[in-house]
Length: 386
Image 1 (cartoon, rainbow, N blue to C red):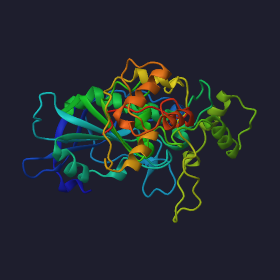
Image 2 (cartoon, rainbow, N blue to C red; image 1 turned 135 degrees about the horizontal axis):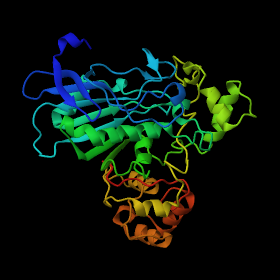
Image 3 (cartoon, rainbow, N blue to C red; image 1 turned 90 degrees about the horizontal axis):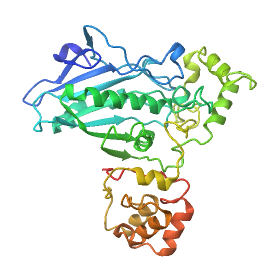
């Protein structure tokens, strides 16, 4: 998008320095500013490859943020790719918010099977026209994908989930700085699509991130999906290092040191399609339990810790009983917080109106089969999903 067609935005002072963007909607009363390519972490390159993201060092002067950053390393991408991709974009109304606390904030995490995708794909002017003009501040973010974002040795050298740590740092940036863009830091909704939705669901469970937002929207994905987590990520990572020619006798530290010297294009993954048939299979990598960001806890304990309302809204036809029961089998509403034992959960689900059409046999089947709260594969949801 040609900068000459758009005037400069207002200058905004963040915790790390001032930024200047563009006024993408500059006619009429509802004008919208866009700040694209704001860094939220130190570049994860060189010795910082496969490390948790480091907070950004402040800068002096005004940083020009008028264009998207390069996208993460991946196959089948038209345009520049890079490892230096920890940037976010803020789209914000220029007019005064009706609330003294500011505009509601929507933070979006892109999908792509944990292997492809970018914030750039979702554009800028469309966000300004379709969302910001409805009194919303919108933030889109970049994060590491593929092996650069999910490689795991299963120990302290590289526990995994670097992509989730990236997202966490971006959320912290939003929490600390969004008020400067007239957003309300206490009214943040986190939204994700596909694997991005799975990340949102996992962020709602992690003790590091669950208090950084109050609502979430999941589109075409959640932590219950069979592909949401890779329980074998350590084995998958070992297989990848063997493909690169690294010896299986190396220690975790030796492996990581050698991987930091591998050319970045060797980490590119993709998804198969008609134009890219040689790409690797979908969802080769993904989040894993690491006893840190994602501690593997008892499901009843996890659910009892979620500090949200009980009700949940769904985009479905309430008259469709078959769909209703199918949804109930996969995503049951959360019980009150004082329900803390397995038997009490079962009692609650037999009583709740949400699944009143399910028989006792079906409830037992849900529990035993991994489709409900007591199942081994279930991960609970923030019940404020919209």
